[in-house]
Length: 279
Length: 162
Image (cartoon, rainbow over all chains, first blue to last red; front, side, top):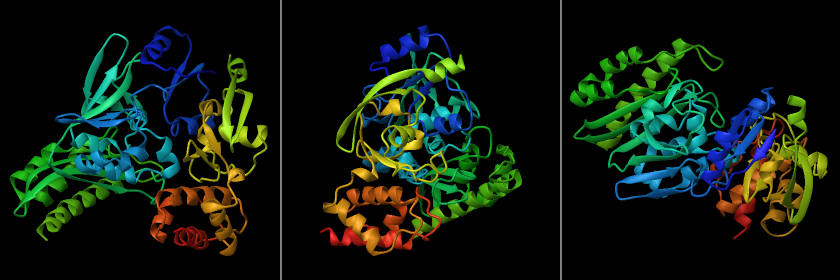
């Protein structure tokens, strides 16, 4: 295994296009290393992205927040802009693994790993985030809900890298709820992000996205919109969530359990947010 | 092909516990093995080898990490502090003494990681509560103590460091 540490994106694209052999891109390594430990063969080339400039910062523009793909989950958790404009993302980062992992793991790595249970994905989904993807020739933006094609699969080709995540500033509140088997380190059995605005005991705006209940994170806008139209419809709409998901049985939970858990978490969250805002 | 790639080597230079170290290492070597086998710093331990247990915790450029999840070549140019590199005075010494005073150590295997995670808590928060200390060591597993005495040591060090 050859180890490369490109210092510029030009150098990186050169490696991606011209070097022969199997390649692995390394960010924090917290998902990659356990796979090698479990016997996956090492690639011919390991390309360490951590020394690329300007990819580990969070900044704001007039209307948008921009997160560099190499931003660590710990930095995401602590960042005041994220806390202010993307509370659900801040909460998901706060519940992510444990501090040693959060110091290394990156938001870009979490997105590229494309786990159906990736905790940072539902909070980006409800923000309608755009993911900026670059190759030597082009830059394109992929909407978050088109980025993941299935477990471990993204819409990127082999010469492209994810460089930043952008989303519009919003005055909506948001929250993130995760059900795991242990408080620290747990991979979500089910997770849910909600953005909302509540006035006079009613949802003025609502968006929902759930993870670990289908091959990719599922946006639940349709159900959320029905709740905005009629707050009395919460319980009936939640019963219908069943139609939007296709969970599996795995080591952490059965499909049946996931169906129930998502509905219970969604019901609890939507009622709870209303009663909290009442006080 | 695979055998060849496993033998690929690279020279790295890093600072470990304040000393500059230069070695040629296989690119597939983990930082944990480099510290233990090449440098004979055996404080960091291997248990789970997948980042769940925290026994291999070290400081890399001032932040705690799991050294089992990092290639040694990734640490080229970095500054590493292991349990062996902690000072006897200041907060580092106080925390070590508090672990002894509170009988926070039973079998001892998790303790280097616990002390370093405790130190990370104290570096960010002069007076952590029990809950904050517990959050800080959530990535470190201990099968002996039940954690209480470890938390007491961290919290007390925070109280005494004013």
